Length: 337
Ligand SMILES: [Fe+2]
Image 1 (cartoon, rainbow, N blue to C red):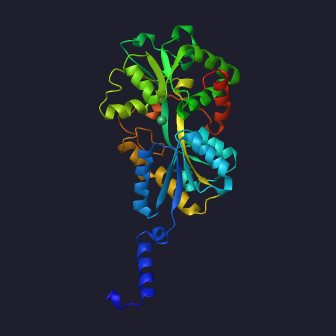
Image 2 (image 1 turned 45 degrees about the vertical axis):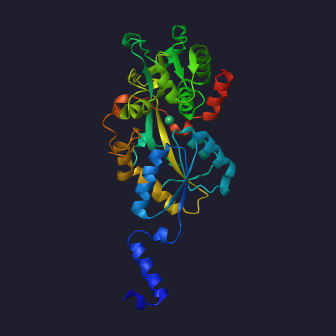
Image 3 (image 1 turned 90 degrees about the vertical axis):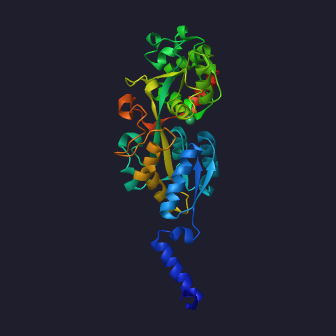
């Protein structure tokens, strides 16, 4: 019967059908470009769910926090990015300080616990990760664990810990120390770190080295261990995790951010994407998926294998003030970069 309908009418009917099925954006060929610095697996799962629900296609461009943040700043208003997602807050601060974000929709902000988003609402937390001290119990007995991340500056820690100073993850931790302890104390700590620590490329390499007994301990994010445990556990089976807690700078919880670019020509779709990933379905992917990052949505649950976020007793750090430029400057001054 449909074959007897003139083609322009058929098109109109088809469009209506697609609209009612929530596929209006796909039908119009309007998609969004996401500059993604979050783990690819996690973002792909978000994109799949979002596109399935809304019909809005998403093109991903992957990179790391600093690289993509700098790229957006360089591209300015001409950036093809509609949305920016990061692993850590400092790259969000970089783009925000350049005035390139549009305010996040109020409904989206309200879905996220106030502790996991900056008060100004220019970007929003999408997930979180905790700093953790990973150690090899056969090399470092529990009784000798440091009470604070600041203790790792002590000469007694020389040659006993590792980190990946070149990565955005560790640089976010330094930015948090800077925010809490100030410039002079941070520089002192970094100089002592230079003397005491062993540099690795990437948190996975730190974990592997601790597991293999090449180094006693390291400072990484929690999920590296949980991800490995969920697979074969071969790079973490000889390790344990120590959470500093007590609002220590080493108990820093880093917020992964999401923002809509002010220059986006698809703002409605871009806002819909942020709303989706911070909403019930998006946050459930954090609980059920393989990322082992924390959920930040109100009433959203994280993976039950994790130490609950509320028990980590993290320091209160204003994520919108995390200054990665200064952190990198101090790290360079200390000879770490
Ligand atoms: Fe990471």
